[in-house]
Image 1 (cartoon, rainbow, N blue to C red):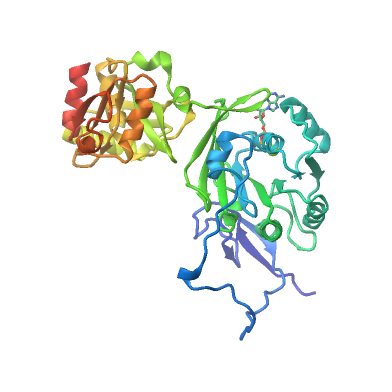
Image 2: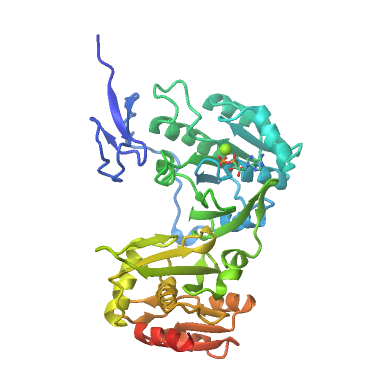
Length: 452
Ligand SMILES: Nc1ncnc2c1ncn2[C@@H]1O[C@H](COP(=O)(O)OP(=O)(O)O)[C@@H](O)[C@H]1O
Ligand SMILES: [Mg+2]
């Protein structure tokens, strides 16, 4: 008997190998290889094509304005770059239970356009129950419980929706392919079929993809390249706040975020995110420092908290939540070397409140000053905001969009700002806040000490 040919495919990035590998050489994921049957060989590229080509002189190509339609939910529109684009494909990723099905059902209601919601995970009854809870009752929504790609495509043709949702791509499959559902081949082939339909018929497609424990889009990682927009649902389970972040967007600014709060009746937009990430009562605590981070096209105020305690063992702890741990080690080393602080016998814990993650250089200085405040056990004065990048030489570098950050702080009642000297010129006379300019970490620490 002829042995069936198989291959091993990395479920994280799609890398193929003829033998099983423990670690993927491409994306370095562990234990990610699954065995799949080898499908029919692809047809070789034809030579000498003589028909039409989609080609034109760059100067002669006319721009057509991208038309959009609103999802009916402002914060979702924002992450999409202003609304759904007809003929575009959106991949929505996130952990189970974070609210992917919820937000899309709410969007279909708010959309007021013919739509089709395909579920491969839940029954029609379950969807109805959720819809009741969310108050979704639009006549324009059709629900289909199906996993077979060709049946789904047939339903799309029959209902002619302006937007269709596939919940989730891991559950749909094409029985003609020999691989089982959820494998890379199945995900890729099914996604291609939906993308082709969306492009050809000028429909919008939203494809839901689950993420693995490690936080990467399992399988759909390979889809990131072929879809137009990748949205990522963030937020930890213990927190009611949810963030939808545009990781990639061919039709708008990437890294734009939309903020929501999970309530019994569904996800509610948070119209003033800065208010959410600030912890009003703690603002007078030692070790806390407010900063303004830039997310997409807007500034959002967040609060970083440091807790510095003596360490009685050899290796002091550096533990962070919402901030890069290695970055913290670097900043502490700069404080040791350039501001002559002794931190080798102290445990340092950093937390960013509200469940948001900050990785912007502008949050370096607030982290440093929150550490100083915790060591001195005295709070920074109420109404103070700190912004600045810290270099290894202890220099404080200017940050982009300083004015927008200060305006947001001013709006929320902040009166004082410690900011990089390098930003001085561009904001001269443009803000009513009391400004303290710093150019080195030593100067910044001394400024903070003078305050506290
Ligand atoms: N009966 C309920 N009352 C209030 N909240 C609920 C209820 N059922 C589910 N939820 C909330 O909705 C979330 C599930 O959202 P869902 O959209 O199904 O997530 P996903 O599709 O991302 O897996 C749950 O984590 C929970 O917070
Ligand atoms: Mg779901």
